[in-house]
Length: 226
Ligand code: CA
Image (cartoon, rainbow, N blue to C red; front, side, top):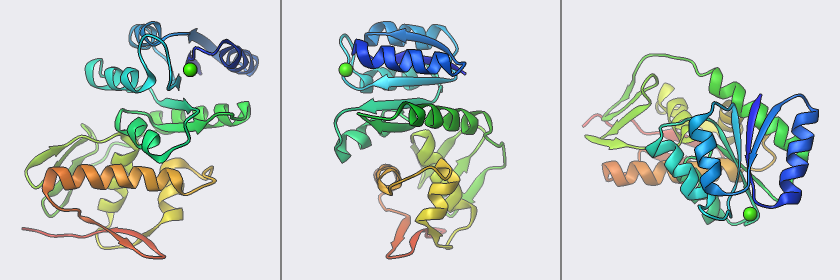
């Protein structure tokens, strides 16, 4: 894999660089946000390791610019020292695909990168899904709800796609996690964060939340045709 490390802490950056290179990956590194964004836009990478606190431009801003201004969809694994739910939610809203909280195990960094890359390249192309006034086109990733466009991070789109594939059916947390992230999830925090972002975006766009929490079981999509 070609990996870009954007991290200003020299010790962490060197650790990541040496480990990934020794594992056979091609690695590039930037120590500030502006250089990192420039590399991410001008060269092709299979995955980006992005620190949140960076000089010049912080990780959130970088991720947002990369997705919205440059339309680069390289998977982003955010590295954060701030273990708070709000920071994670902001990370996903700005285009991060996954996160790890420092300190992390180098082997886990690699496992997450490989897994993100596999899912990114293995995206299946299928038909447009329609459930009531909610539609999702898996090819263009355009989502419309109650007449409004909905912008979502990639993992939230995948969650919505799953729920829309069988409206009314309850999807268990385990099933959703396994479909979207593989079997490597240790906590339910990631799913909860993404579900929160997804439901907030849909509610903002359509004025109501079409997803229902079925307590103790999971989530389902409520079909409503008006
Ligand atoms: Ca930093």
